[in-house]
Image (tube, rainbow, N blue to C red):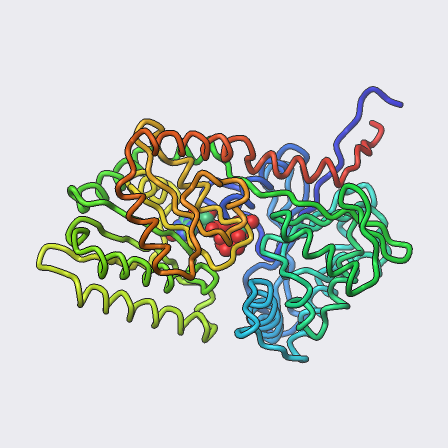
Length: 467
Ligand code: GDG
């Protein structure tokens, strides 16, 4: 065997592409992948974010950044509605976040979703060859691997699911559940955020499809063998710590401390999404004020919640409910010089966010379900290790598996949230430092780059190409 080996080219497929700079809103995903793409050279393929009159008018755009080509294609208006706003975000997102009550099942949007997977695979096929490592991301593209195989692709195919995979009892409510999970078996390696998600997937394959589970995540069904494992995603911890020490972060940290004066500053940072437990979180804060009058005038809560998928009624309804509840709490408890809750829907830059995390004493990360939750990790990376803030973390966030030294709460329980807030507010510096040191180790020892390299090593299966 040749002593010189070259790495295979990386081809990434995800709904949105890039950016490759560090201002990327996508956080861990973009940063982790950008490193690997820069090093190996590659191709990043997905939707342009634009719509075209019809499929024939859909343009392909190519942007070259270093050794990486960013290739995007347009969607038709019908595809945008059926694929993105329809099946992906009205059916799969709620279902996979354990929200059967919100999931809509519509045959038309399912067909469009499958059609987009097929059309995108057809457009990618001429751009790749069998030596490439193809890595498909997230719930937009469950059928993508099967479509590439149908077109004759014989190379290595990997898939990573960024959001939870619930137990078979929930997944099987989806009319296309069997087709969808069978299609996933076209990939060679399937990555999940946690052991729970992986076990739920394996349970579906064995119980519902009659497959078999072997060692090291091996799943077999008929003549297919796939490896399904947990690969918890990380952040660019050092990069984020640098953000927190930047002048822009410093200004925001100071501003936050100024407005807090001697009050305890509590923050939350989440896309405005019903999976994030925002209403329940606010109820928990309300419970604290209701039951502990000594906290009046001594705590304040800033929730940053940039609008997301605002076209969908469930998201518009959430916004109304949240703003009404915040108004109610402020109306009831505010004094002339104290407003307990502020909700901001405008987005911040990543440096500003890092400063806000660093200026806060407590961060509430209390999703009802979350694949991982990168905010929890960013908060930890942004702290001053000598005087760190306290992380309050939902037991239902994927991050809980690695961040057990946070204050772990049941996000559905207002009492539990109020109790954790009291503990966080009163926590002595020694205990804050001890907990933060453990959390910091976890965040710095499994970064976005580690996640990416671990996944690619398994996908590559040590098969290096001769030079
Ligand atoms: C999915 C899964 C999984 C938030 N506000 C602003 C802003 N953000 C950034 C955060 C963070 C990112 O957005 C959100 O990441 P999360 O992980 O918290 O959540 P999802 O968007 O739901 O991501 C999740 C993730 O994929 C990765 O696998 O962890 O479970 O649901 O980076 O900082 N960024 C900027 N301004 C804001 O106002 N610039």
